Image 1 (cartoon, helix red, strand yellow):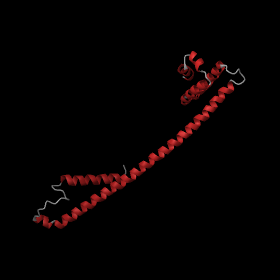
Image 2 (spheres, rainbow, N blue to C red):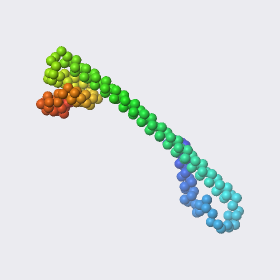
Image 3 (tube, rainbow, N blue to C red):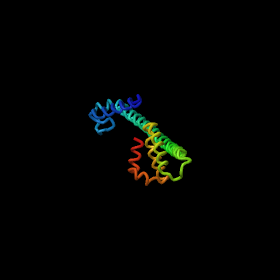
Image 4 (cartoon, rainbow, N blue to C red):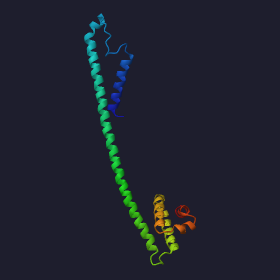
Length: 175
C-alpha cells in the first residue's frame, strides 16, 4: 500500500468518524437558529465549507487513483493477451520443427531397409523414444504427441495393437 493510499484511507476514516460521532451532520441544517448558532454561524459555515471541500478533495483523489489503476490493469491484460498469442505461435512453430526432426531421425534410422518393414520402424521409434526419455521430464509429453502422430501416419496401429496398444507402448517406452 503506497503512502498516498494510506493517507487517503486515513482521511476517509477521519471523515467517517466525524460524521458518525457528531450529534448532527455538519452538512445538515435543522432549521432552528438559537443564540449559540448565531454566534458560531460564521465559524460553522467555514467549518462546513472546509468539510465539504475536504470531502471533495478526497473523493477526487479516490477517483483519480481508481482511473489510473483501471487503465493500468487494462494495459496489463492487453499485454498478457499479446504475449500469449505470440507464445502460441512460437509453440506451434517449435512443435512443427520438432515433428520434422523426429520424423527425420526415425526415417534415417530405417534408411536402406525394406520398405514396409514395420518391425524395424517400430524399433527405430522405440530407440528415439528412449533417447527422448533420457532428456528429461519436460520432453515426455512432446515425445508422446509426436509418437502418436508418427504411429498414425506410418500406419503402425495394428502392430502396436498386437503389442498391447498405444497407451501401454508409450508407458513402456517413456516411463
